[in-house]
Image (cartoon, rainbow, N blue to C red):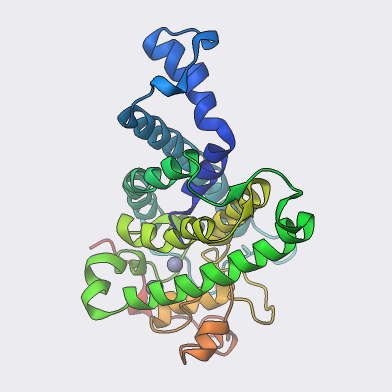
Length: 299
Ligand SMILES: [Zn+2]
Ligand SMILES: [Zn+2]
């Protein structure tokens, strides 16, 4: 779920952008070293960590402050010319000051989550994962762009279902996951408003996958970008009704109904684990409003 714009930065990072940042920004502007004298061998672990953290942080904020406001504008603000309504405007809007609170939570959470994600990037950079660059390896395009991404979705959806379900255990819910569940009528800005450990835990499967299975670097980057967008999509309340897919309606019901629809991409594990609830027969997607007391309150 979350942690996720961070991995957009991570995607760029493992493709050599961290080196680019070192060569053209950190070396010349902080240490006065010309780009022709660039030598990554001289960089200590602390410097590598700080550069990667800074890079992930900037990329994540850029992602968050580009796609969340855009989605919010098109779905929550802009009025349809024919109906005069917003796309996400059913019976009531998100709580007063909710978006402000979501942005505030996301700002500090992203700062901590990116620091916790930086060690993964250090491992990627030092070649410890199964990310590969030659398309001819591992069965060519079929594996790279079809089989591996399907495995990626199946693996992360399975892990996230169980991690998320674990986060609803009474011992973990209050300290870690409750922060994200303050928002009942979610907005695109809810997508990264997590306790950092919560968001990081749910982001771990994406990193672990490339330690276990080979993945072409372009396919990995595209998959991570999709993960980032998907997280916004399931919080924007505007939904498609596709078979097997856990969409915005399913995730809205997770926020309002609490013990249902833990999945991220598919409904497979929810159906198997007895936690599936059809969102289209449940408020607000069945045409009835949510209970008033379920609305977001700042206090
Ligand atoms: Zn939850
Ligand atoms: Zn959520």
